[in-house]
Image (cartoon, rainbow, N blue to C red; front, side, top):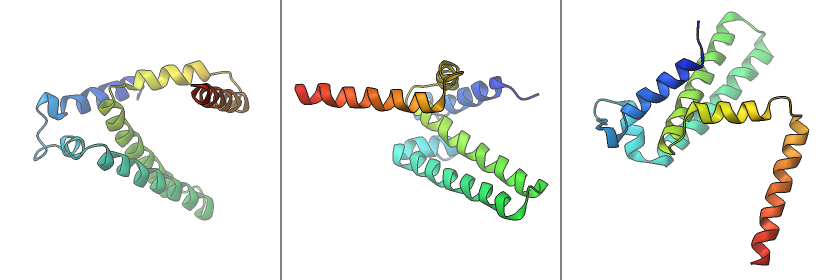
Length: 130
């Protein structure tokens, strides 16, 4: 049964492939992405996000067939993978994201967005005063 341990193990594998840990870009896709720098993996996140949206729209247009659902799952897996590469690059882990999701649990999405907007507004106002 899949679990959050899968994300943790995958992040650890990604970490082991970083150039700092001896990841070889000739042998590892992750090492190659990380060697190219953030523009490379951030571009992949954008591509995979777009492909995820397109796969979901195909379900909307073609019906929830097993093939279309499998394609959506595959695209989300690609998106998550490349997002994990970014997290590792920036010294973060899946646990950091899960902690944030747990913090938000039970909070209205509308309330959460309003709080974030207020925090941004307050930080801009504080910056203008200095």
